[in-house]
Image (tube, rainbow, N blue to C red; front, side, top):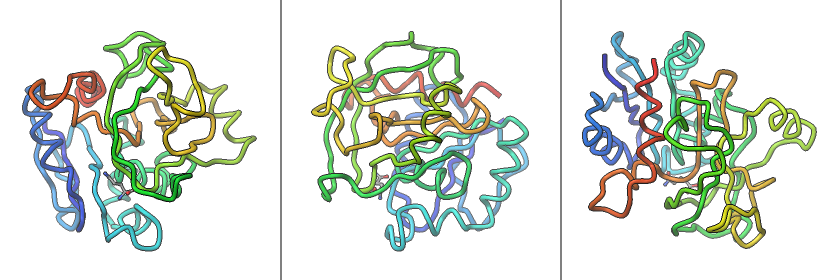
Length: 226
Ligand SMILES: NC(=O)CC[C@H](N)C(=O)O
């Protein structure tokens, strides 16, 4: 059983994800999107990057690759799917998760460390943490501002589908701690099933102890949950 890391033209965090998963002894391979989803896929990573140069809207074109039909089917069958950064944008653009990641309030590309609050600890992605835990994790995006209709956000919140929110070091949701103006500080959401999750910050960049922390390891462990 192998995790498939889907590479689109312009993906650039696929190898980071592969290195991070190898460090956790999770078997993974990079799959070119035109080659289709391997039958033995036990988990799926939609990695970060600039698929199709972020033209149109970040993730919008990759979301229309035929492999996304296979990924939606696999997700419906319970195969864990994790979208990171550009992969989170692909997740929303393809309907795997709700809402959209839009241009940062600053209108700039932002590359910095932020804090994330774990909103639920009973999902595959957060089983390694406790609710309310604060993770330090990097962001690197120009279009990370989470947007969804107010009514729908209220429903997503009451359904427990907000997985991570931007917070300060103490877990407080402040305007200053919200790096991109995301609605209700949302940084990551679940899909229809808890086995599908997307987030803008990069857990694979805080998995190898030598490159700046290990707070992201637990998120990647969710891929083992199939
Ligand atoms: N690191 C990334 O995946 C970048 C995401 C996307 N290209 C953006 O700038 O919003």
